Image 1 (cartoon, one colour):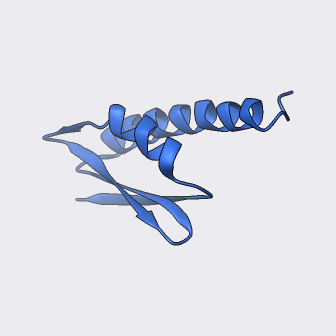
Image 2: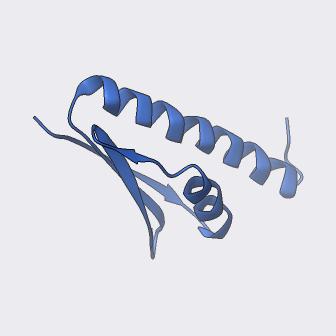
Length: 79
């Protein structure tokens, strides 16, 4: 069975693309692709099993948390 998850992140994709591409991984159980769209950045995750899907989602969401915090600091709205 193949699982697919798509995450769309709105806004300027330049910094996010750099962050995610640095962490890009692919193995025999799955991986992800990153593309820019008019709406922002789209990450498409594919995996052969649920455990691999969860691991990749965790990795991407950790990077998104860091990206959000960087955006807050850059725009002066850090908590």
